Length: 454
Image (cartoon, rainbow, N blue to C red; front, side):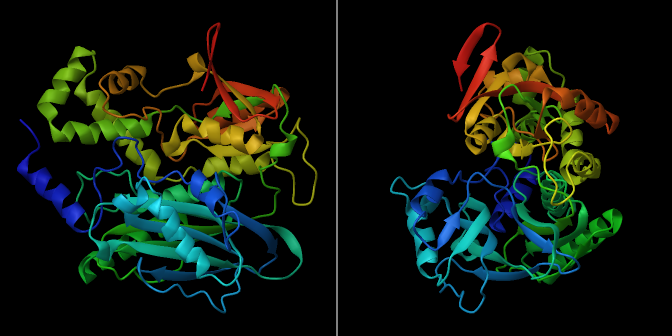
């Protein structure tokens, strides 16, 4: 018994509206890793920082940054004159044949954008989304950041997100799709201790006024529930289905990006168990052929009810911001302008999220140091399901996690206090490794007495 006609029609409707319902399943993500692109554009006016998940600059008291949104079709002339902005966060949605072309067509496309820009712009958060939907739904979005002048009293942080992994068995009008994007953007801000003056700039689209009104209503409900303000810049007006968010917040603390202060033997704490997003993926895969997948699950001693239970937990974590994480991190950061003390401050935070264990490599690149992970200490939300997904080759990234799963780097002396604080707020923290020798970006996975380069 394969996919029911009802679900097949629903998945087809998602796809026809420009939202790829299943493309995220193999890797639990549908974004291109763009390290190579960043290298290729080093001498252009468009500077892409990778890996990076937020932009930041000094905050003058009571003078909030302005977001100037520009949306283009992929073959439209790029207009940047007179904007006079130096930073932006960006989303590009291109045909998958362009994104994954062996001749790096996507690099050529981004170089065209760079050549049309008359001044240098730093892109600190970039999402490149491959799609096999029709060209009308492809776009380039720049949220230009216009900062203000004044006495420096802290930092403004800007990030963005877009919904890929979601429960496509729910109706298209379900609030879950927009909530996931809003939550991820807020979690990104919280991860650097940015909890004040958070303002959301939704990025959304739909084929008709009824759907657009429903999305706006869902945004209203979410922002009222969590007491956030938002600015509606209207829809993308492309007629497809899209859910995204740019988020801006302020902090009067220093930011936990002091990579140069991280020393050998410092501890790597993961805030929660890994692999929950992969469990949502398994649930979606199960809907494709429930009879066959259920039989396979049973052969591993896994009951289908467990998959449903973890799916519900994944959706809860994806759609409810973990505000306590932001407060905890902020508590262990020095006030703006003060020096960091390794014995009392968090030095670095970094998201695990949908990247899973590949986030360890990103961390090592940012630190330019060895990252040593104790393989037996990697906490999976359900080891039986992770083993099942890996052995059956159903999902390649079994460590993919929800956006509330992150890493925190602290000294040995501070680790116990951070663990206790996280546990108090119902996280499940684990020390999964430590920092190794400086001068080389390498991940070592320790498995008992055997060392393997990751």
